[in-house]
Length: 115
Image (cartoon, rainbow, N blue to C red):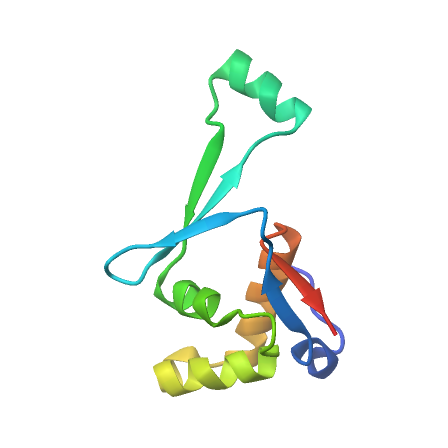
């Protein structure tokens, strides 16, 4: 994993969910994000290797809580405060973990980050 150089500036970013991905929440509050595989190579793999057309990415309790806080208006700092209120010491080291989590979400195109 690459280290985020200026974590303070990164935490000021505002994430929004990418509308390309559908998601649902089960009765326990766990979120599943649906990733549709629609590229040329995906189509070939689906035909030749019978790979699924959709992957269902199930988030854990922390990831699900964070996902539900993404509203396009809260910064990572604000989301972090909500995580701290919900999980307390279990969330530490909070902002290092949060920034890495959002970097993963961004790299997978699940979220779009704006200033």
